[in-house]
Amino acid sequence: MNIVHVLAFHRVAAANSFTLAARMCGVSQPTLSAQVRALEQAAGVALFERYGRRIRLTPSGKALFEATARLDEALGEVDRILQGTRRAPRGSLRLSADSAVHVLPVLAELKRMSSAFSFSIRIDNSAEVMRHVLDEEVDVGVMARPTADPRLFAVKIRQDRLMLLVSAKDALARRKSVRIADFAGRDLVVRERGSITREVVEGSLAREHIATGQVFDVATREAVCEAVAAGFGVGVVFASEAGRDERLRALAIIDADVAVAEYAICRIERRKLGLVARFLDTAQQLALRSGWLADPERRGELSFGQKA
Image 1 (spheres, rainbow, N blue to C red):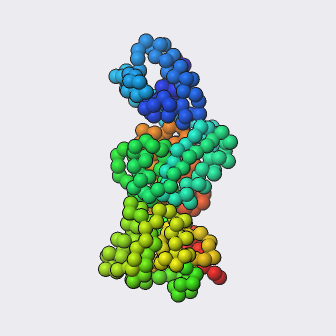
Image 2 (cartoon, one colour):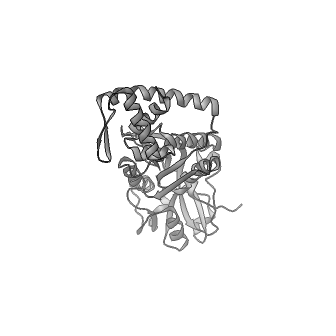
Image 3 (cartoon, helix red, strand yellow):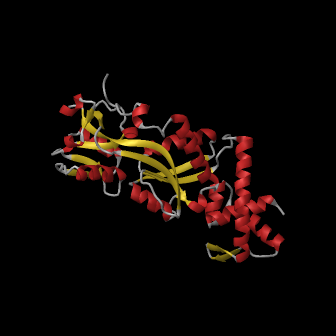
């Protein structure tokens, strides 16, 4: 038995695709296909049923996959003990995120570990991020929406909360905090429907029966900042997204439940696969080192934009 061939089978079975498994492992598809064929020939049994580009495990393949899953977990533990986080990531990772702020530090750490690592990223709201992952359009999602979907694996990588964003010229800019009642009658710039930012702030306003003025929908955090700076109204952003723009002030909302969190997600069958596993591990390690799981007030993020 060739352990390389066995692991090649496991990668393909876990990804349910030769193409995806090859890309995630950083090897060519012909190489991976040859390794699986060699295993099938040695065993004298077909492990996959092939339908053009689609594959399905045979009964023998399903039985073997149950065993290789335990093997892969054991080898992963051995690798972590012997090499820690030094093993260089290889291949390309597709990501979808509700904000670049939450995902780029993790990608930067992976890139620092290896020049062979590359990625593509798309920015959308949390609902779309989840759909991208479930539809296998991306490998990993980073979003603020908690999920109990059994098809998904999720790990919290940041504790956060919402803040009110105002122009430096606004009368509220002289304050360090606001109450939810301060939203009353104010024009509001907020992410589009489907974003957790909008859900949380609209829920808080509804519970207190507070009506805002006109609501402007925008697609990104950067657009929220630019719209507020241009005078369209006040905005709502994560504490971690507030930045240090001299045109803006970010104020803590002190009397409403505006706590949120950020999660890294993937399809559950891919959580231990190549770059997906490396991203999840790196995100968790970075969160612990950087204190991202602490409340933003303890991290000093609730006064971004304030002048001393």
